[in-house]
Image (cartoon, rainbow, N blue to C red; front, side):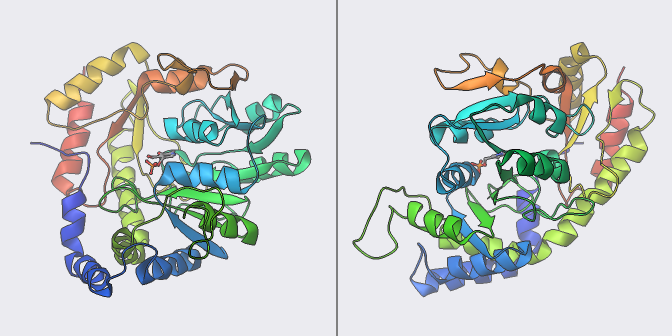
Length: 370
Ligand SMILES: Cc1ncc(COP(=O)(O)O)c(C=O)c1O
């Protein structure tokens, strides 16, 4: 039996009429860039997120650096994130000209460790960039408290956690901007690249709208800017998918519960930790081998047995070859938890359309290791 890692085609087929009809609508509108469908999706997304503004951009990485720029962050400014995030979080800091400060993650959730953030703050620190890693919110209350105390901005990297929630907070409630990715494999994904920023700051909205469109808000009138827009065809796909995100997240959570029940007595791995009261939407279900030396062998075993397992992410940012490529960075304190995560992580197949047979088979193969 083969268990794939993604279910893109199955998801399309499950709501084919809704997606096809939105795409037809865009095609027949004759407007494909900053047209009516983008506007509609931005309105729907802001309503869904509960923020005043949502701006569609080219991808999640651009969402990050456009937000940094719109918030006035640039050369000499330090932004703090954690070393086991996806590479793009840090890449975006450098694109905006900022310095990256890497701290450790919490050993259980793998999200940013607020105590490590506090210890890393210097005179040059201007912002914290918590990542809602694997589909679970970073501890935003703690982050917000630190930001308040030191007068820092907070930009949420929400590429992996649309529809997640904290125990007593929503994404977007405790920050200056939220950055999402809609690349196909995300929980809300289009057939290609896409991204968005949502925010309650009018100036961030206004600046990103200009920056994404060659610095222009009016025909022939420009200031310094870029080309990073969410195409209307993608906006149409996302508009068709957005009403389903709640039920898809629920299904991911139910699959995660099955994995956890089936694997909880396997002494050779540790399972994902969901913080009590948080809605963890399991963009990824990441286990760790207790012994990092076992990771490679276990990954090979899973793949040989038909399970398309992957790693997120097997090389921490500061351990990449050639790091830091002349870019400004500071490693703040021990990064031992992030390094252990990189050395021992394995992501099991996780998408809403997984069948019961595929879930059961995955559990059985993992259980039979060794
Ligand atoms: C945590 C995180 N940040 C940023 C990104 C960048 O998003 P994109 O690939 O849309 O540029 C991704 C995913 O790709 C991600 O997982």
